[in-house]
Length: 261
Ligand code: NDP
Image 1 (cartoon, rainbow, N blue to C red):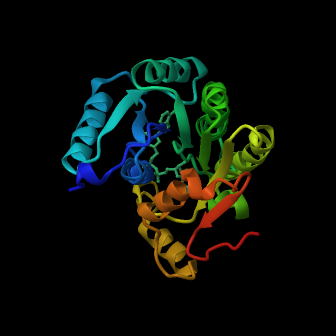
Image 2 (image 1 turned 120 degrees about the horizontal axis):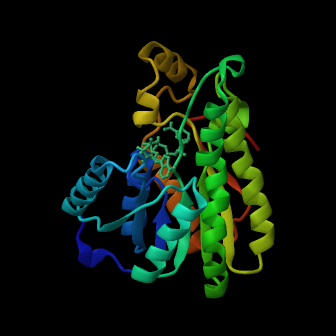
């Protein structure tokens, strides 16, 4: 249980896309404890109440742990949906000064078997979404003169992966986007960076067939999957004032799986 009295609120609003997922939940916890006012986005993609109920249950579970996170529905791959969501946050909570582009999906298959939908769904969710969300918050950050954008890329965007031409392309694209936006905002008090996780023990990785997952773990120099908290720690650093001189950078958090410069 977090002692709320020990948390000094900093008056800044942070939006975590896909915030109710595995890594997203850990990021929410860290940033909440760091004093940010937290908003977690979830999607209600088939408009069935089930997803809303699940998100509410997630919020209640967080509250029991002393983490107070507002939840907002929105499909970050859809400009109009994201626009509605961000307007709602700005009206009800405040200007978003930290954006963590965390929502992501995989639709793995070798290219010769890949259906166009598998390509476009992954592009829209992992890459187009970071244009959409960053575009919708950047003017608010510029007006405030302080902002942080962190996008969750992947080791597979750095080194490639069999069956992931779609995912690896999207994740690599995030890096080029972030470096370019970092240049555009460097004199405006805004930093833009990426974090590239290796294999982290969330539902996304636990969905990989066990024998394949074990082979992956064998390749990790540290010999284990990462913990969502280890990604959240890198994000918390990048959004902190301690990281004020870091922009256009990528932090690899992968147990030594791939050592990029
Ligand atoms: P999860 O599946 O647990 O979390 C992803 C979240 O994104 C889910 O809550 C998901 O919702 C949400 N989401 C998907 N599409 C949309 C959308 N269109 N609009 C709003 N929300 C959406 O995965 P992880 O926590 O493991 O992954 C988080 C990020 O980290 C992803 O970008 C992933 O690619 C990246 N990553 C993960 C690694 C790992 O090993 N786990 C390794 C490297 C990178 P729903 O449940 O409804 O699909």
